[in-house]
Image (cartoon, rainbow, N blue to C red):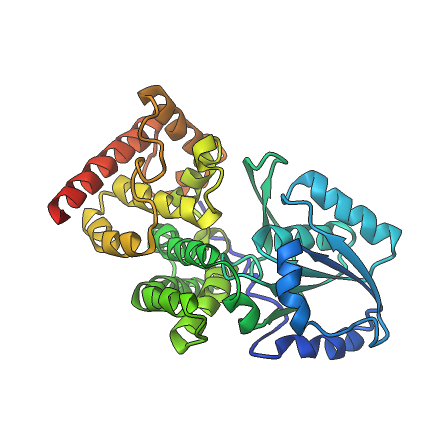
Length: 371
């Protein structure tokens, strides 16, 4: 395949500091935006509102819209309808990944209106990336869409994110780790030193090193409500560095096996309550088993145990499933549209099933040795 990359590096502007939201009226005025739609989750708005400027008092026409729960085609269409009906010229997305991805999709598909993003959790890189992860209304993953542009502004208020649920932060750490493990095989087999790929690889290293070196401390600090240097570093890595990998590397810096395993897990009711990054965490382990990188699995297991991330079918409560069910999981993971096939070797239903079984044995043996 000939080399081709289109980099979509990041938002036009961003600020990550206490009081970041105060910049919003000045920015909206500079864009000559007057009719503003705020799309938000219920809990996310409760967290953000104390820091959010009074845009109506500042002279803007503000329209409020509560997110429906899934980044689905139906929900995106509902937001687009409101954009057209109220003649909106700028959307502000406030919330977690699904809210943000819906705002991105609606802004682009409604005719390319301006977009501002205020993430209220550090659970993924949605605020930074030029794509949306799409789901059916029942929560089953159906892939993603890329967009030709990114947001005009990202504002990160650390105090809002520090007050977000801890489990989302941990899921974000896992999803960020995946940026390294999934892009590593792609970026090392491209065969070119294109500068954008060098930037992508350096960003991917950050996605590995900062979580592994500072993630556990950041989690402890968040439990205590301490806005520490370690927490700030990990928080921004979750949001920014993860987005930079795909932003610089395009298809060479995107998902491979770990996210394909995530997609397959969404078909199983036992995993419905698990966050995106938690399912991806298990996907990382299956990918490493496929690659036969058992030393790396050994390295990661203590970190996984400390953060209570799943490394086996038992951790996912799938260990009582039949052999046929687990084979079906493997089959979902290798369907023709899945990014697992970007790995530099042939991946089949049988090889994924074998990797799952070997991983189960390895983690069980490791647990027995540690008891």
